[in-house]
Image (tube, rainbow, N blue to C red; front, side, top):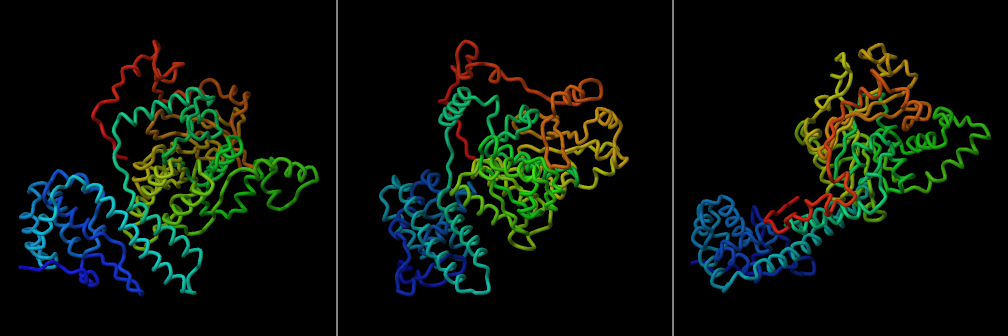
Length: 530
């Protein structure tokens, strides 16, 4: 028979397990051997209790190396679902894998079950093991950070970002979200609806873009949504995004973070100043301003300078650093929206991770995860493929998204920018472009909503003012001029609308006009994990 493993075996390096040795002062890392034994014994005694801890723990949560092997064997048997988990099946699984002896042997397995009278408190014990694991990880990461800090060859701020990312990974591993029952979620949703119903928002429930036609369709950019704004070069993606950032931050007092991977921060600010003061961007770039223009520049940019806009123009930014910076700004200042210009310039931290399509897929999933984590809309600009230029009809479509279909899959909303007058000047406009030009509305831009997970798709219209590098709403006379055949109305008819009683009723939570909520059963057995 094998004897029980001794505590000193923890200092040995065993292949396939995670061992943190004592520090230089001989201190043993935080752990709770008795609780590890109680959890493993309880899992082998009562299979039903495995459900309580299987999504809380991993093998890394166990400090004793033998316990890591035993947990992995229990987990593998449980996941297969064909064999009951008990002392005999775990013993057999370890023997078949050749790991029985290094897991302590048959005698030690039997001792684990003998020490446990009941598994009633197994979940409580598992959460303590989780806390011990977090402590050990903090010790490990702080040691790595300390070693790196002595490296004079590394950039200090790069090390700061890496340290923050490592600490966040510990937080993520230690604080796993669980599912929620439908009753609590319905009550939360109804409370949110009631608060919005009693507030003055003109139907805008998210972050407003400041473009009235677009906001009527979207109701604003919603928390936790990933929004893609895609277009061919020269359509004005950056100018459109900056105009929305300005509107959100200045007009609606929102906090916005911009990542500019293509333009320098000063260039972005110059564009914002040009649009705000309505001074030609070319004149600002050359500093060729009259006395009146200088005065207008200072008076018009006061609100802009007081707004909560944060700009990061780090070149060759990777997705992990972007996430870390967003978390930092969110914790220090609060964030309402994140804008990335543009998605295809982001990089994975590790080179050679699959092909470019797989890399873009990882980045788009990460941006969606960031939106959910911070509960803010994340807007990512994207380039369209050259296939657009090969068609007679130059209006973009979802298949034109460049490098990865996962962008379309991960996005909650996909918008395209299309300007007929641009192609008309190039001599490649589709039939009907002359209708726009005859109205004399230079810069008329169609914002095509090609995907909208939560509502309608269709088109909204705005105007690109080239000399100020900004977009604005159509003026009343411009809107009137576009009425009629071939004009604004004919395009807006492509919009799909989904009428809802909730949007029409004064009291969406109940009453004679909308009795459905009164009968909503919040006691149903539905559980949601997001």
